[in-house]
Image (cartoon, rainbow, N blue to C red; front, top):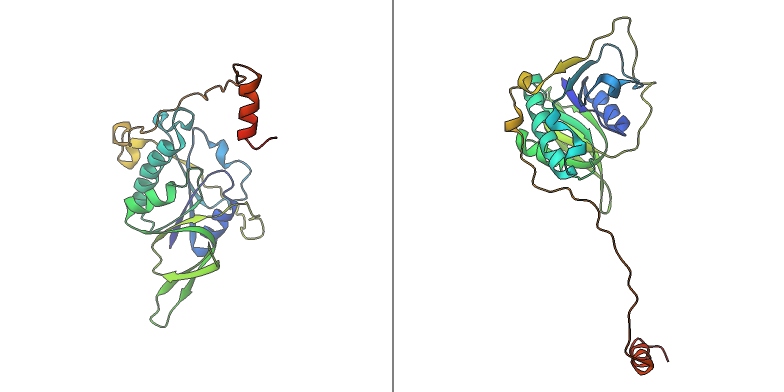
Length: 220
């Protein structure tokens, strides 16, 4: 079974979880292939990269960026035929839920680890350990879900072997996954510069007014 892992900063644990579940497929939404550099991925792992100028995160609020990212990842997952998507908990916290809604899959947040366990009916069940309010929870269900994994990064070198053949990164445009910039969610939050706070001294008419204010503040 193919497991789609979405590449992002601090995605080491997400990659490790995806690798433990099945055949790893890595997807990056990035302007170049430098995002794959330094990752301890086996050379035979399928790698895909999608990019369009409308996905530039520097021009969007994090909420709007994750909405667009969810649309792109959902369409890529449909094309790849993956029913399990693994990603790292995002900055705004909306990516996993938005992606699960678009794919009509269950969403599990704050995931620590996951594994597939066979049953007597020769079917596999997905067991997920997640951080809950009262400790670690263990959830079980069909292997069809979006898993938002907690950082930090973990080493994958011991888990992944290398081969002599290197699979090149497959580059996709939006049209390759049947999308266009017009299909992406429009921005909902306007990015503005931080307002400068100016501290102005409080003025009192006279000493009596100052004393009265100090008295009201509890100062004798």
